Image 1 (cartoon, each protein chain N blue to C red):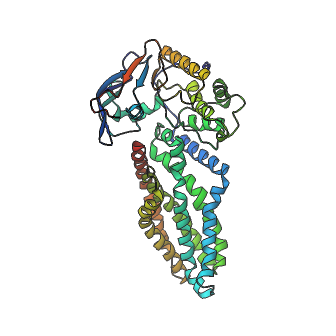
Image 2 (cartoon, rainbow over the protein chains, first blue to last red):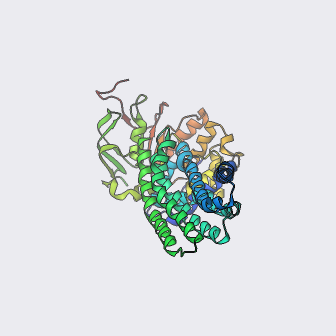
Image 3 (cartoon, rainbow over the protein chains, first blue to last red):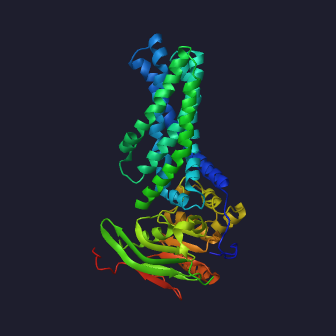
Length: 241
Length: 212
């Protein structure tokens, strides 16, 4: 092995900026995801299946679906995000890239935030994009569909962010799935209640500003706190590994 | 740079209610190769993970350039390269993409340099093949390509010789020796019979509570 391309040896005082490092993490996650496209389709397929099976299993009546539709879509989106969470850090943990991520000189919570952002773009965002189609299928009116999309657009990042804490905490465990759900579902409930509440209120013609503001507050809270918690949880999980 | 890069004072580590080592003190000086040895389960990997900052379950103190490491985590991480058991290679990406991703957060390098480093580890012609199609040894070599372009003064290498053929092993030995001559510090754990002139040894597993 020749090594003629190495610079002189001194202690380094500078390093890659946090933003550039975040971009690199995000880009790599995207690249990996698009190499394995069937994994991308899984949560989407689950989402579509639950929403299509509901009318068949319960009742195809327009009045029922119009009332329950938003709830069905929200629950299906929530569960499909939950299903995809285990993959957030698992592969990186198994192949050692997570160790390298933790040892990068940039603040870990920012790198975790970049990973969570990639997770949302790959799972949450496609769900939001599909929602209008499925909304029409469950006979929601135009206004409700618009509000539903908006709540999912604000709500799914919250789901990814909170979920990242659970995924990081359960990383070292063998049967992480059950524990992950138990840890995360209680934290998802407020988001679900306010998400469906917004759509119900819009369907009655009431103003939704207050609901949306509260959901926005959830998002800000999750954005500012969850990455710190996930980063700390990752350190603990790796420390035992 | 004659003061120690990393200094361990009275390290103690307990794992599963068994003391792996206690009262362990040593200094890692620039320009030296240090070999951590001991039987399986004696805590070689644990020690290296402690030094790298991955494992926090220990007592004692670690000094980086003479000052406690806990207060200067960023300076420490910037100047340390750790290669673990798990090489940090994504099986779905090609060696080039892996190397690019691994260096992007530390010191981005232009593609020709990365390509040259991969050539240097004997991966010529495999740069754009997904890593899952490569053999275990070739995957290790992708990780080792980082050593050819790394400028971190301290290298922590866990079982670098695993799955590497004999030609590769002697090339790595040369690389470590050359690295030490340039003033870098290297800590390796290995079962391979590594002997380099001036090599420091840390022997684990000699404690009274050792049981197998």
